[in-house]
Length: 317
Ligand SMILES: O=P(O)(O)OC[C@@H](O)[C@@H](O)c1c[nH]c2ccccc12
Image (cartoon, rainbow, N blue to C red; front, side, top):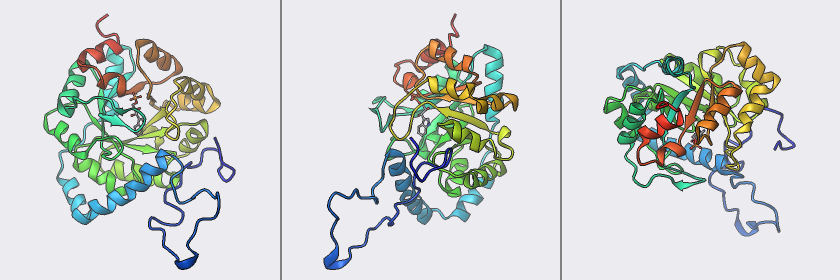
């Protein structure tokens, strides 16, 4: 839902608490007015995550300054082509290219896989026929880590890796690359076009692509204005990150809209994200026009994730 101050497609969260992270006590007159809501509290989970991220980055930067991270990025093994892996698998199978997500927990579901071995899961996804992998790196809300990304790369997994992080600063883009990422996530609800353009440029300079995620037709129209956006991927997240509600039909509504038509005309690779559980769900978003799917929960909770991949994509048939 749009708030009064917000225009269609604009960033829907506040990047920082309006009165700062530390509310200053202000002496004898420091009291809260009646039933006034505290506007210095996050209004939804996305704000909570993004506000916490700013604090996390400060701690990281104290340990490893940006300049040190940048020189590590120069020495890192070169990234592999994320988009090519998707189009190759899609051509070989006739199904959307699968980005399988290594995800232990989420704020909406809690722990999804208590028996979580990131490397084993990644290897199983690859063996089952995933085109690429997505690795959650957020620790506080998703119980992920940059270390998981490193471990998966170091284990010799060939599938290109997406760093699933809530990026608000360039520091994280370098951290992703140093940890072995081949692609990064950028969320349109969090970042205005100016920031998206900058992070896309940093990603490019490091040889990575971005998955730019939208949740409304307005956001899609906005990101379509970004120069060179066709070199990256666009994702439609069927989950509302404010309320957690999942609606698979969102992908179809957006793809059927005039803005979705423009995506087709320009040949942009679209990713259907979240809430995909069955081969019917895959067929539904494929018919809507996506060339790739991003799937976490339904695969990660299975005892045999490789079989899960084959089943989801009907590869045994
Ligand atoms: O577990 P699911 O419903 O299959 O969803 C996977 C993925 O789309 C979801 O984890 C996701 C999509 N966009 C995000 C942004 C941040 C964190 C997580 C996500």
